[in-house]
Length: 322
Ligand SMILES: Cc1cc2nc3c(=O)[nH]c(=O)nc-3n(C[C@H](O)[C@H](O)[C@H](O)COP(=O)(O)O)c2cc1C
Image (tube, rainbow, N blue to C red):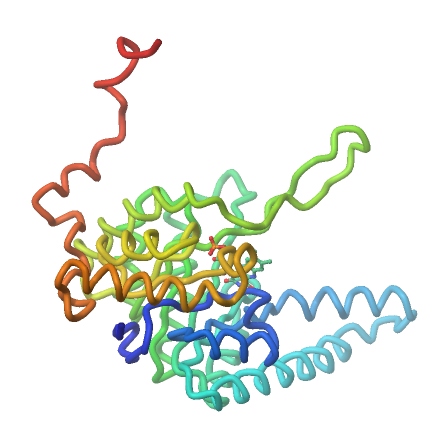
């Protein structure tokens, strides 16, 4: 079933999210073969360049050649990514380039314009600034997001979406600010690397990076709110879409597309086609010819939209507890 996302016509609302599954042409080929509506390439990380330069600098005793190394590694890393954009675009499936840069510097613009030139149909900005300064207010931090979007959106002609972190105080006001700076869509939400602790060795270890299906619920609420209050922004749901029913729920809440990563990890690339077919069959069963005929039918503006405002368990606890 077709959808329109960021002004692009997609053959399916199932998009493969920025992940290892879109990091090379072998994996991308599998995504295409199984009917992905679009591909969000693995993010290009500016930080990666600094890390590589720093480790080489230390290991090989390059002295103060750090700046040269950064430039050399930066060019090589970027060239590799742009080649991936070019080859992925040649598959005919729309390619969305994903960018993560340090702070709000000019590298955002460099990567964005280069990806556009290499054939990206749209961009997804993977922005996250971890607050570690107790004096920085939420408004100041969110202003960074808006600044980055303004910079990028004014430098390219392709549509720009923003992949947001989950714990914003007021996602609607952030989205409103991003819309005003030229964002065409938002991805709700990113799911970041989380550190865990081995208590016996007292060392850090990475937590399981994959999602659980139950994580979708909070995303549905925000999707329903955002797509109703800010219909000018296209919403794609990421986090917790593990099967066709989850995709239908996201679309009913107003999303134009769903993004999958963990579902591929758990069930293989076949899940892309399975989710797409489930949506088609569900729509046919309910008499809907197009996705637009049911998209947003259960968003915040629907007749029972008040349900989304319910956050306390007043009715159930404590009296009903066994
Ligand atoms: C191993 C791994 C690598 C990821 N790399 C990226 C990345 O480079 N850029 C990004 O925006 N999201 C990245 N993500 C987040 C996914 O795109 C996705 O938003 C997240 O996994 C939640 O979706 P899911 O429930 O379908 O897994 C990564 C996730 C995993 C598990």
